[in-house]
View 1: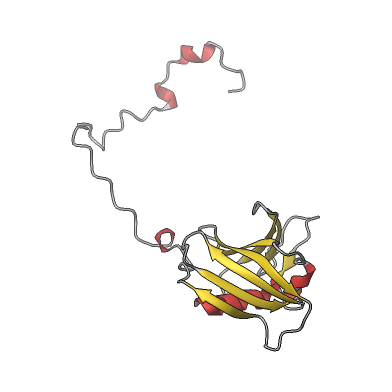
View 2: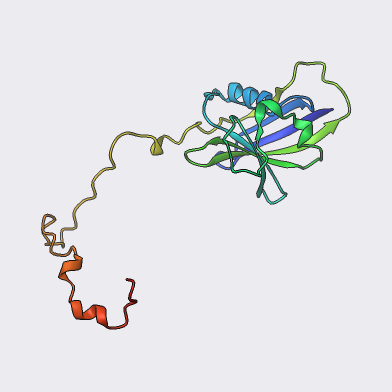
Length: 183
Protein backbone atom coordinates (compact mmCIF):
# COMPACT_ATOMS: atom_id res chain seq x y z
CA UNK A 1 0.00 0.00 0.00
CA UNK A 2 1.39 3.41 -0.99
CA UNK A 3 0.45 6.45 1.06
CA UNK A 4 0.69 10.09 0.01
CA UNK A 5 0.84 12.49 2.94
CA UNK A 6 0.48 16.28 2.72
CA UNK A 7 2.52 18.20 5.32
CA UNK A 8 1.81 21.87 6.06
CA UNK A 9 2.75 24.44 8.68
CA UNK A 10 0.67 27.11 10.37
CA UNK A 11 3.83 29.24 10.64
CA UNK A 12 4.50 29.51 6.90
CA UNK A 13 1.50 29.33 4.55
CA UNK A 14 3.86 28.83 1.57
CA UNK A 15 5.40 25.68 3.10
CA UNK A 16 4.20 22.33 1.79
CA UNK A 17 5.72 18.88 1.48
CA UNK A 18 4.21 15.72 0.02
CA UNK A 19 5.74 12.55 1.40
CA UNK A 20 5.30 9.13 -0.24
CA UNK A 21 5.57 6.08 2.01
CA UNK A 22 4.75 2.39 2.08
CA UNK A 23 2.43 1.11 4.78
CA UNK A 24 5.28 -1.05 6.06
CA UNK A 25 7.55 1.98 6.62
CA UNK A 26 7.93 2.92 10.26
CA UNK A 27 7.20 6.25 11.83
CA UNK A 28 10.97 6.48 12.38
CA UNK A 29 11.49 6.21 8.59
CA UNK A 30 8.96 9.04 8.16
CA UNK A 31 10.68 11.09 10.88
CA UNK A 32 14.18 10.62 9.41
CA UNK A 33 13.05 11.46 5.88
CA UNK A 34 11.33 14.62 7.04
CA UNK A 35 14.24 15.67 9.25
CA UNK A 36 16.73 15.20 6.39
CA UNK A 37 14.49 17.03 3.90
CA UNK A 38 14.07 20.03 6.21
CA UNK A 39 17.70 20.14 7.36
CA UNK A 40 16.68 19.54 10.98
CA UNK A 41 18.69 17.80 13.68
CA UNK A 42 17.15 14.31 13.86
CA UNK A 43 18.39 13.81 17.43
CA UNK A 44 16.01 16.44 18.82
CA UNK A 45 12.91 15.07 20.54
CA UNK A 46 9.90 14.63 18.29
CA UNK A 47 6.55 12.85 18.37
CA UNK A 48 3.74 11.96 16.03
CA UNK A 49 0.20 12.28 17.28
CA UNK A 50 -2.66 10.48 15.61
CA UNK A 51 -5.52 12.99 15.77
CA UNK A 52 -9.21 13.18 15.08
CA UNK A 53 -10.63 15.34 12.28
CA UNK A 54 -10.38 18.45 14.51
CA UNK A 55 -6.62 17.91 15.08
CA UNK A 56 -7.17 16.83 18.70
CA UNK A 57 -4.44 14.47 19.87
CA UNK A 58 -5.48 10.87 20.43
CA UNK A 59 -2.41 8.59 20.30
CA UNK A 60 1.25 9.59 20.69
CA UNK A 61 4.12 7.83 18.93
CA UNK A 62 7.41 8.98 20.44
CA UNK A 63 10.98 9.02 19.17
CA UNK A 64 12.22 7.41 22.38
CA UNK A 65 10.53 5.44 25.11
CA UNK A 66 9.22 8.11 27.49
CA UNK A 67 8.28 5.65 30.29
CA UNK A 68 4.72 6.89 30.55
CA UNK A 69 2.32 6.00 33.31
CA UNK A 70 1.32 2.38 33.91
CA UNK A 71 -1.66 1.16 31.92
CA UNK A 72 -0.99 3.55 29.02
CA UNK A 73 0.25 1.92 25.81
CA UNK A 74 3.53 3.49 24.76
CA UNK A 75 4.46 3.43 21.07
CA UNK A 76 7.91 4.31 19.73
CA UNK A 77 8.61 5.32 16.14
CA UNK A 78 11.07 2.51 15.46
CA UNK A 79 8.59 -0.22 16.41
CA UNK A 80 5.40 1.03 14.75
CA UNK A 81 4.60 0.89 11.04
CA UNK A 82 2.41 3.46 9.34
CA UNK A 83 -0.22 0.85 8.41
CA UNK A 84 -0.74 0.09 12.12
CA UNK A 85 -2.16 3.59 12.75
CA UNK A 86 -3.00 5.04 9.33
CA UNK A 87 -5.56 3.56 7.01
CA UNK A 88 -8.14 6.10 5.85
CA UNK A 89 -8.02 8.95 3.37
CA UNK A 90 -8.07 12.31 5.21
CA UNK A 91 -6.68 10.73 8.37
CA UNK A 92 -4.76 13.37 10.30
CA UNK A 93 -1.60 13.49 12.36
CA UNK A 94 0.51 16.11 14.07
CA UNK A 95 4.29 15.94 13.96
CA UNK A 96 5.67 17.76 16.99
CA UNK A 97 9.15 18.87 15.89
CA UNK A 98 9.92 21.46 18.61
CA UNK A 99 9.08 20.13 22.08
CA UNK A 100 10.28 23.27 23.83
CA UNK A 101 7.79 25.50 22.02
CA UNK A 102 5.09 22.90 21.22
CA UNK A 103 5.39 23.53 17.46
CA UNK A 104 4.12 20.99 14.96
CA UNK A 105 3.39 20.21 11.33
CA UNK A 106 -0.08 19.21 10.23
CA UNK A 107 -0.11 15.96 8.24
CA UNK A 108 -3.00 14.49 6.32
CA UNK A 109 -3.23 11.29 4.28
CA UNK A 110 -4.48 12.55 0.92
CA UNK A 111 -4.12 9.45 -1.25
CA UNK A 112 -3.73 5.67 -0.97
CA UNK A 113 -2.96 3.16 -3.71
CA UNK A 114 -2.90 -0.61 -3.46
CA UNK A 115 0.49 -0.81 -5.20
CA UNK A 116 4.16 -1.01 -4.36
CA UNK A 117 6.38 2.00 -5.00
CA UNK A 118 9.10 1.53 -7.63
CA UNK A 119 11.29 3.87 -5.51
CA UNK A 120 12.77 3.41 -2.06
CA UNK A 121 10.29 4.87 0.43
CA UNK A 122 9.67 7.13 2.15
CA UNK A 123 10.61 10.05 -0.09
CA UNK A 124 9.52 13.63 -0.72
CA UNK A 125 7.37 13.77 -3.85
CA UNK A 126 6.73 17.52 -3.94
CA UNK A 127 8.07 20.56 -2.10
CA UNK A 128 7.13 24.22 -1.84
CA UNK A 129 8.34 27.01 0.41
CA UNK A 130 10.83 27.12 3.23
CA UNK A 131 10.27 25.22 6.46
CA UNK A 132 10.09 27.05 9.77
CA UNK A 133 13.25 26.79 11.88
CA UNK A 134 13.39 23.62 13.95
CA UNK A 135 13.81 25.32 17.30
CA UNK A 136 12.23 28.54 18.45
CA UNK A 137 15.47 30.34 19.20
CA UNK A 138 13.86 33.13 21.19
CA UNK A 139 13.10 30.58 23.91
CA UNK A 140 16.58 29.04 23.89
CA UNK A 141 18.82 32.06 24.31
CA UNK A 142 21.09 32.27 27.32
CA UNK A 143 20.89 36.03 27.36
CA UNK A 144 18.77 37.53 30.13
CA UNK A 145 15.76 39.54 28.97
CA UNK A 146 16.34 43.23 28.42
CA UNK A 147 15.43 45.25 31.51
CA UNK A 148 12.28 47.27 31.19
CA UNK A 149 12.62 51.02 30.96
CA UNK A 150 11.77 52.52 34.32
CA UNK A 151 8.54 54.46 34.54
CA UNK A 152 9.57 58.15 34.74
CA UNK A 153 6.45 58.87 36.82
CA UNK A 154 7.38 56.20 39.41
CA UNK A 155 9.29 57.96 42.18
CA UNK A 156 9.65 54.89 44.40
CA UNK A 157 13.06 53.60 45.33
CA UNK A 158 13.53 50.09 43.88
CA UNK A 159 15.69 49.22 46.90
CA UNK A 160 12.93 50.25 49.32
CA UNK A 161 11.07 47.08 50.32
CA UNK A 162 8.50 48.79 52.48
CA UNK A 163 5.83 47.61 50.01
CA UNK A 164 6.82 44.00 50.64
CA UNK A 165 4.32 42.76 53.18
CA UNK A 166 5.54 40.32 55.83
CA UNK A 167 3.37 38.17 58.08
CA UNK A 168 4.92 39.84 61.14
CA UNK A 169 3.63 43.22 59.93
CA UNK A 170 -0.01 42.12 60.03
CA UNK A 171 -2.40 43.02 62.84
CA UNK A 172 -2.88 39.83 64.94
CA UNK A 173 -6.53 40.81 65.62
CA UNK A 174 -7.23 40.39 61.89
CA UNK A 175 -6.77 36.63 62.21
CA UNK A 176 -9.56 36.34 64.76
CA UNK A 177 -12.22 37.55 62.36
CA UNK A 178 -13.35 34.57 60.30
CA UNK A 179 -10.05 32.90 59.49
CA UNK A 180 -10.06 29.12 59.51
CA UNK A 181 -8.43 27.60 62.57
CA UNK A 182 -5.91 25.60 60.61
CA UNK A 183 -4.72 28.58 58.58
